[in-house]
Length: 239
Image 1 (cartoon, rainbow, N blue to C red):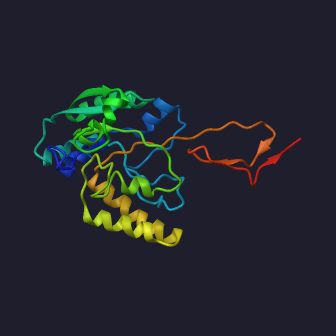
Image 2 (image 1 turned 45 degrees about the vertical axis):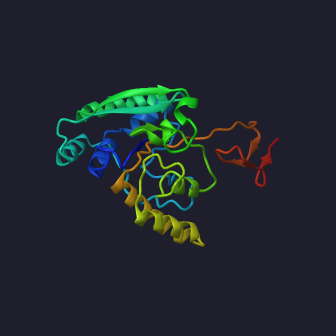
């Protein structure tokens, strides 16, 4: 869920933090996925990536803190905003969850749920509801490493930067992460990136997807990822 950092009220990071604090991630995972999805922490660093620093504290539902932040931002009575998103899988249901959650802090969200053709438009700034809307929800497919998610949606020059987030410190950290030559170095930098994103909150990422495959009951050791890539080097077939 992106929040445009260059448009009021999301120019104030306290407002963005408040919105993220209204999201009950555990309830979403249970309700939308019957528990078959890992909770996320508002950054692209899923547990599936070896470079993810999993010691960064998890953001949790905190309505009292969210109300406090809105008050400090000069919006004690909330605000009106339109959330634009796409008709795809569970995304419209998630939009309703966000809409209802925001009511707890006085934020009045109107939903605009479009076909994917309308939502993505030309996929360029100025010609895309995805990239131009002040508040929106977008699905992302899996990649073998987090680099694409760190760059395109979040760096200052990112081609998918729907949040219009521009932060030189973040850009430098991503550059350092991509240049790191070992997982230990990447993991340290990933912790710094996660803490920065939790503070700035240009996006809220409430969950990732579990990717499920089926094999015969006598087959074991098949490895796979959510890009439908499969490895059989450790596969065995029993009797």
